[in-house]
Length: 186
Ligand code: IMP
Ligand code: MG
Image 1 (cartoon, rainbow, N blue to C red):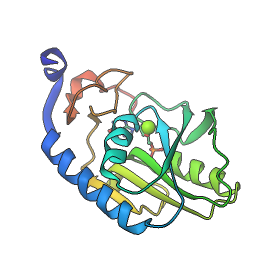
Image 2: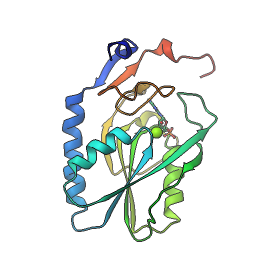
Image 3: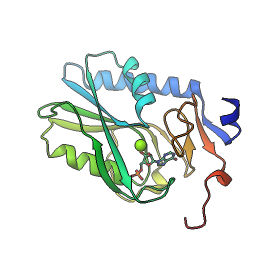
């Protein structure tokens, strides 16, 4: 872990801050969906650590399911907005209350694509819960229902978020040193 930590410019959100905020989100979701059929949909892979802690903070019955997508083009730090489903849901979401669980909303393209697609399957409701939000980077407006933290425009890793598939195991959110990903064309 010490090795990975050397690649960080700083720690942005500590373990304790994550824990506290996720407990609050779990309480809010439990309150809002009490007595309703709730299905959490986790977008692989970045959202997995958040999902596993979030469901332990939710104290009402609910189910979980997963989908995997991949973005075409772009670079390793910029999403292109062109998305392809790599693995679809197992569950039929018709007439269910769907809550999408995401790691981070940046430009908003990925989530817009996912919500538009899921809406065609006739869920009762569809809401979004994201751990991190970068409002300054938004290109398409996406209504966010639950937000863990608004963060500045910096490339972050840890707690599920990766750079080039590495750093997901860090137990906090850190800012990656710029020299590790800066490239001339962005
Ligand atoms: P969007 O389509 O621009 O909103 O991109 C969202 C996706 O880009 C996220 O699900 C992440 O996979 C990735 N992403 C955006 N910003 C970051 C970051 O700071 N660190 C790691 N991944 C990021
Ligand atoms: Mg992601």
